[in-house]
Image 1 (cartoon, one colour):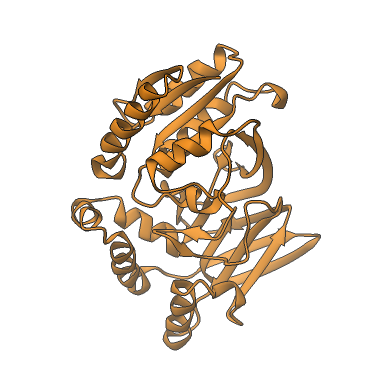
Image 2 (image 1 turned 180 degrees about the vertical axis):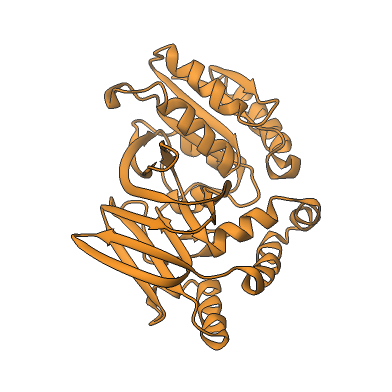
Length: 315
């Protein structure tokens, strides 16, 4: 097996550079066949992955060393070229970002040496559930590994991605605090919005939606659980919708969100479906795998599909 390794050394505020140094040393010691591709500008990993997919590689695994955003861009770069599901180049992941939520959801060790061993010890690809979306207004389509959100969580991402404070907090291993600190500001500023949801032949209208998250596994932000029952092994998509009606109810909802119990709350609606369609009638923040989608109208259809990962999940 040959490994094409895409490394974003800037991920995790530079932590990925140290992680890659550790991994490279181990690869050399074990005399593993590999090639390395260092990213040098935003979205570069998508370009690299696209070029690798065009080569129709066999007996090859693409290993991503970076954060959730690096993995997201690599997956989407591959899928732009790969039409035939039987010809998909397997992925693997060594987490080196600030959140690493896909690693939590899949069962990948946060220790680089252990994560590498999970790759090297695999003898087959694991068909892994991922999310798929189309957005009708801008005619977009793509894939996500973690979640796609509108409203509250996306507004937090928008604030957190302007990062002088985030860098300081992440370096002190206080990323969760950064997320919560931004959340407090969003509670005051984020206005409720109209949302229409269609799933399983039913249509639900929400006049004051506040939190709208479709997810592939439990984790969001810096390790919080948005839907604690979501599992990456389940081919269905989980989505939670919560409305904002008054301050007392809003504080209760945020408390449930922070504790990973929002989907069990009487103030939220939990969907567990294979396909869901939902629209907004106002400009709202959106996020996908922790990356900003901008402030825009949304007409989204979300479903699940599979992608091969050449990595043994932790039990």
